[in-house]
Image 1 (cartoon, rainbow, N blue to C red):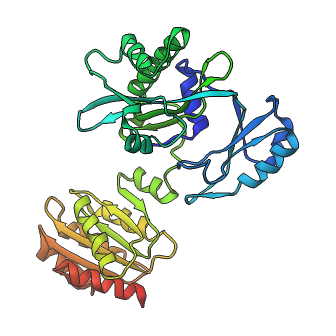
Image 2 (cartoon, one colour; image 1 turned 60 degrees about the horizontal axis):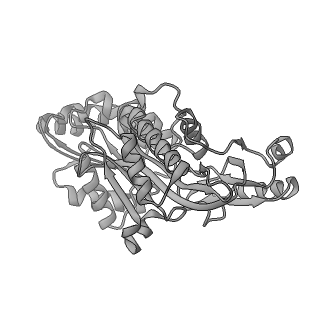
Image 3 (cartoon, one colour; image 1 turned 135 degrees about the vertical axis):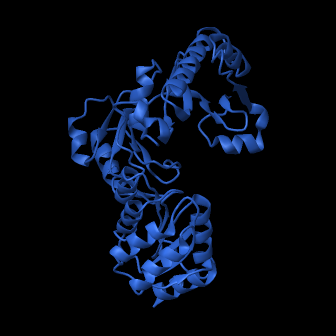
Length: 369
């Protein structure tokens, strides 16, 4: 679950991490009511990176310029996301930029702190071109991230005096936030030192919460990554991802569904979605899955690919026969209770394939027709 910058900064502030005060607006006219000293920075609030390169971050010296630039940014399309909100903050006089993040290292099975004195740019580029500028520290899950860890990282980045202690405090707070909020990533890029006194400030904030842990955290904002159909599927305990094609796909098991998407693409089709009803799908699950995938506008065919193990073919067939779709449908059905399932479908005058390849080819043909 990705959070917008303004949402992440609200959480950062609760943990004592210094952030710029800001206001979120949705219309250029709201600029007139702001009480933020100028110059200001207007930042598009989208859940993708590269906002600055796409023109989604602009500096304004006065209200007139701010209003004009707000009008330019609002409504922009940045990597497929339309800008509907702006975060307006007072511009900071930046001296040096650093990078600081905590993320999950799945290979090591623990959190890792990643820091660099080359902040403000893509950390992937730094890792590729100047890996010596990156400091990494894996966090022992038993002892956690201790103050001396933060001080050690700060020394390696060239900090000294009060700035060293401030960096260590921010690192400790970010580590605590990451652990307590079940974050997969908590990132500050850049963590900027002011040009005058060197005070550190989180200029940007990125926070990704583990989807499986959101139930533990009351008050989290609505997950705006999900489309309306993805949210409906999640409410029904179905794994659904919306794509941009016209062949709706339902399968049981993530691997089977992925291979089905590949088959549709191989035969020249365009998958409209990924939907996994799970290993123990019931008649009700299947009915919900069909209803969800067919709500997507532009769907021209439905391909149901079932390899029954725990899932029973007769349960799947009952859902299909009870509510035939409004678009041409292709069914591949094999596995547990296959004979019973085929009998149910035949009674409803629905043919079921045994092999997946000819079924996928037919689904693509129907979508084209």
